[in-house]
Image (cartoon, rainbow, N blue to C red; front, side):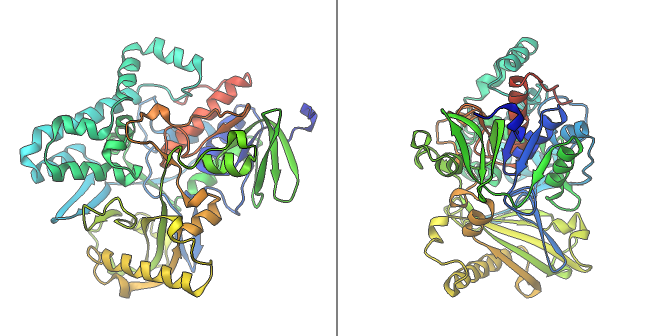
Amino acid sequence: MHDVIERSADVIIIGSGIGGLTTAALLQQQGISTLVFEKNRHPGGSCSSFQREGYHFDAGASVFYGFAENGRSGTLNLHTKIFRKLGIEVKTVPDPVQIHYHLPNGFSLPVYYDRQAFIDRLAARFPHEKKGIAEFYRELEEVYDILSSLPAGSLEDIVHLGGVGLNNPLKTIALAMKTFRSMGRTARKYIVDDELLRFIDMEAYSWAVQDAGATPLVNAGICLADRHHGGINYPLGGSGSIPQALCRGIEKFGGIVRFQSEVSGIILENGEARGVRLSDGSEFFAKAVVSNATVWDTFNRLITDSRFRVDDSRFLRAPSWFQLFLGVDASVIPKDFYVHNILVDDWNRYSQPGGTIYFSAPTLLDPSLAPHGKHTIHVFVTAEADDWEKYQRGSREYREAKDALAENVISRTERILPGLSKAIELKVLASPLTHERYLNRYKGSYGPLLKPGQNILQKPQNTTPVKNLFAVGDSTFPGQGVIAVTYSGVSCASYIARKLGKPLEYLF
């Protein structure tokens, strides 16, 4: 019905999240034309920035892996390798501490970039578990060593898998064996202390929003080992610098990113994705379509064919967030304060909505994000859209509910930052309904989570049940987090490029 002359691009990407932009940038650099449609005025999705009264806030993510400069040539340091390939620079500043944990029973622990300093500090808290601590984190190092030596590519690409297996047979076998193990089960091989095992649960929950028992060992090996190698590096200008740079890369090689262009549906013909329809009724066609939407939004909203519907019970659903964006007087933050903090008041509530407080002050690394003498603070807790749907957006009841929760979170945060409530000069609040509205995410969720007992390879991959429809983002392997969705983009671009006869070179 639609021949090549009528195509708008070789590949259409729905949404400008990091996964979608990474896919588009790598394909476009390879000479495969791309067209990205984004609902909002700016790119990045939950990895974007916004401004209020001279303050620049990170809309979501603020802890970033993948920007190190070293000689490793495998799957890690993906941001460095991608931007090097695109010829685009993203300036960053290193952070000496990944997270400072503030836990019950006076348990306070900064996770230093220096691995031995972190291990020593943890062993000092649990001297009877010194050997177990060393053995557990050694296992994570082993995963890291394997991953850092293997090239990034699609697990659905037989040519890629065959090449990796042929060139790295022992490491491939070792990695395959580790994919069936969880972080929690591995920890319990070496550690018995309940409080220490709780801490390891928090090590997983801090980025996976699941306890260690439900977190694959492979995922843990990436994040909890790489923080001591590549480290945490903050992009100058805020999190929005990453998607903006990817957009520059796309446009540099002739691709197009269209903002304020909401996709309302995916066009199917005989069970095959042929293009997209925008909310204004216009239609665009391509050889392949890539969805950066959640699995529920893709198959229950953008596709209306009931044969492809994804039931809500098929996956665990990651929670949404209640967020506070605060502009404060700089005097409230002491000089020895760390950028990223996690607070837990009660171990019995840490995984319940609002039970764990995430706190970051990125202006400690990049003062340009706030007016002189001020700081930006981002505080957030998990929340469920179901608890907020009883409110009408903009109503007095809705505002009062947001203010009440914000007051509670601020009060609890004063445990590590006394006087915070009196130092606030600007306050912007966002509920799960905000996430649902601005990011087009079902229930404001951050994608599906693995159920206990599942291994990481059971995450949805880039291919889908619909021919020529592909998926990227936190609904796909390897899951949540900026570096994870970046990998999904690399994987998807690699698969599509080979399918279209222009295979990508590995990132080095």
